[in-house]
Length: 230
Image (cartoon, rainbow, N blue to C red; front, top):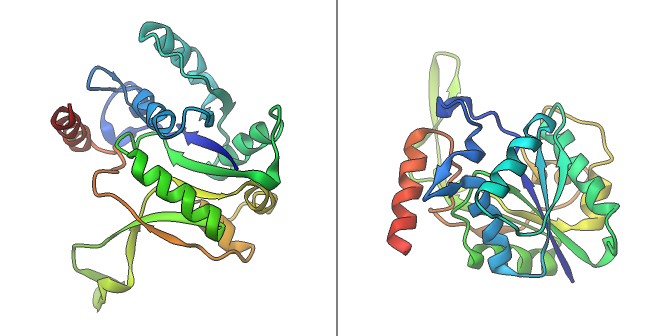
């Protein structure tokens, strides 16, 4: 089985209130994106990795790679109008790469701004997808949950729901086929794209530390965790 990872780095990061796109902000002395890429190579040194970024950010990324002497091998693809388009562009690039075998490959799709993903979680996602065809890491909800009904609301049982993380891993042949369908606003992640063509989604226990860095407080929390692990 060949392992691929598609790192999605197309976010503008407006909620970070920073001029620099959030995937390039420094975390423990290195851009967030470099921590994320490194995590996948720590899981498996032979993994084949592709980074999807906006075309206008390519020069900045290459400059940062030189500045921080970051030389882990990866291909580049450009983002599209929607995340769906960006993933499809990345998948096409993988499909065209030398030696690619869709019938013997698993592809992980991961948010660039989840740098705290651990090798144990990456491994669990790949192992589950190899056995069941799909894997999506989730964590239980800790807050109470209510459904809006106009100006009123109804309580929901939080045990019936979970919070979704990445990496989401699928067999390459199934993923490529699913991304041939037209875009729909109902596609909130790759699992929803797969479900739309009839695939069932297998869940994996995620990690609390596998946060998506969205607001400044998230960056401070990730910095704290990294310092604790050194």
